[in-house]
Amino acid sequence: LGEFEAQIQRALDLGVRPTHLDSHRHMHAFPPLFAGVVRLARKYAIPWVRWPCETLRGRGWPRPPRGQAGVAEILRALCRMSTAAGSQVRATRGTWGIAHTGRIDAAWLIHAARLLPEGATEIMVHPGLADGLDARDSRLADSRPRELQSLCDPTVREAFVRNHRQMIHYGQLGARQV
Image (cartoon, rainbow, N blue to C red; front, side, top):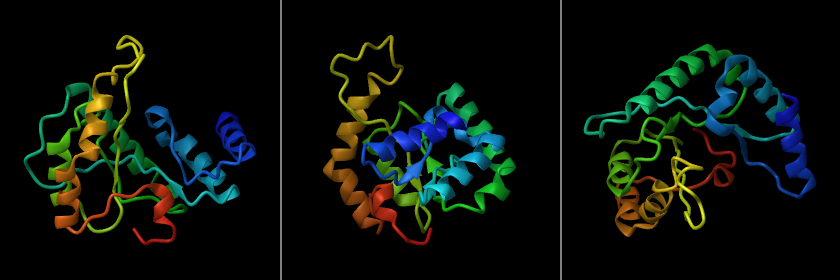
């Protein structure tokens, strides 16, 4: 937890006010770490902690890669173990996109817009430009531009509007109920 706190302090020292806490590959979901991350969120008045529990609603989802489906299953189990600590912090209703990491496109986002529950659900994507990023350094090098393009696709935005859903980031959640 010392490293988590050092990173929070570094952000604050640089004038960045974290909107939420999460970790690479959801390491913070491990129950002993999760309880500590919750304490750090409270200590530093960081209002949200990612709840990496993915339970996709409805039918029609593409089959996730086997490895990612396993990651999502493990994270659901870890979340069940962390329920008591999780009740002490504000979190979204869950995180969608874990099982489909690297496979999210406009069709996936449009499908999600139709099936999202009421309240805030995080959709985890990794958008970006792969300029200079070697595919050997990141398994997501090829999917980053596709996810960026999908998030900017007007049909995706229209699907969210049509289904009375907003695309926002943690900083915009503020005091909203989830």
